[in-house]
Image (cartoon, rainbow, N blue to C red; front, side, top):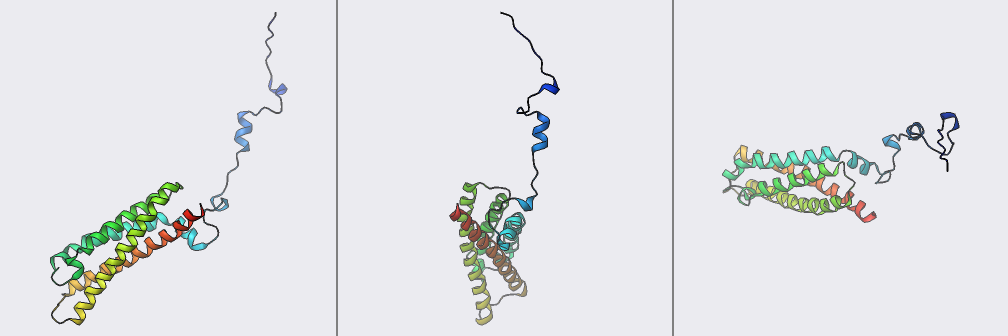
Length: 186
């Protein structure tokens, strides 16, 4: 038996065989705005998805600021309920943890990571809410009880902690609600 060696020239290439050139030219690029959305057309959900990394960074920085500026409040703990109970530490820690988790969620479509972030953001919301209640209680007691005297610095620190706690709670709650809706749809 004779073996026939045949070579195929480019002119004789069958039309049903794809060459690398055909594969490269057939790939279509899709603009990010034309990609299918995980969240539908709700503008708030799209904003949260696109800006999740920035919101997570904001939340992380708010937690660090609460812990850092809370150090003087601890030294004045005799005049502040929030200082006595260490609200600056546990609100700051949970804000930082959920902020880091939200930054990781930015580029992830992993449903397991999303499911892990839900309880973290939920717990951060509740812890920050309790911290807000303690900050408000400290301010109200300082304004109404004449035996409790807050210096201007302590009053300003409590107000600053209250502001950062409110911002962090809003971010945690929004991420919890929007990603909770995504998990329920999946």
